[in-house]
Image (cartoon, rainbow, N blue to C red; front, side):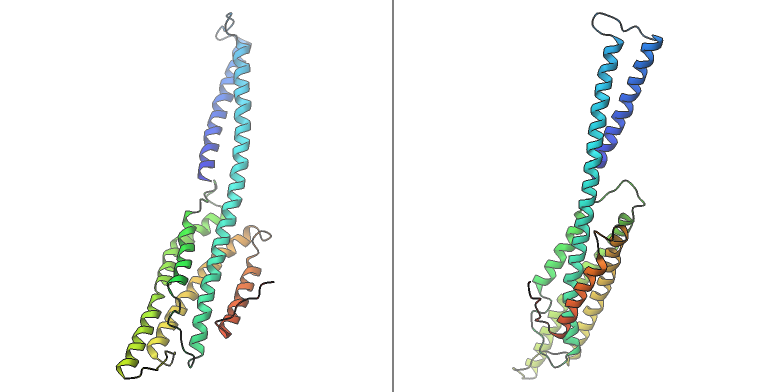
Length: 254
């Protein structure tokens, strides 16, 4: 979109200059400020050339405006899709944490919120700022929401990176078992260290979801037919509730 904006401004400047020159040449044909009736050049010839240039610029300007509109819509689609996917990924991790917090007798796996899960989310986070969405109007509701969200995105990334604390807490709990001579002990939320780590991570992810929800809602306000966030959010939340009951739940493909 940035390149489209630059070209639109450039073509508009050319249009203005060409229109001004064509107008001056037309006036010159009527009032003869400058004589252009030599065998090689005439006022009519200059006016024809400038008119042709002006027509070409108008066509190029219209095409560039159309490209701008298409790129704007495409950028909105990419922003919304990435943000909604990010919401779904974080929601799944939060649901898993909820399961283990509630069920304090269930063994916690040593790969809870592991590197693969974290990196997938961080990849989406890093992709968002690279999307070229720069409309002409500074009052565009999505660009306003994007500006607010960009100020929050570092907090979201930090919250995701802090999930590594869960594995640290897991390892510390296992070490405490070994120190006590318990080689068969399993890590559950009956351990205060593990429970505190899970609850802290859960609260951070919940805040991330609130930020993403607010951002995604701004798209639905712009165009509810293209961006039906209420429906998408409900679908994600429904799956999350099933994961809260069974962390190994997998939606059946139909």
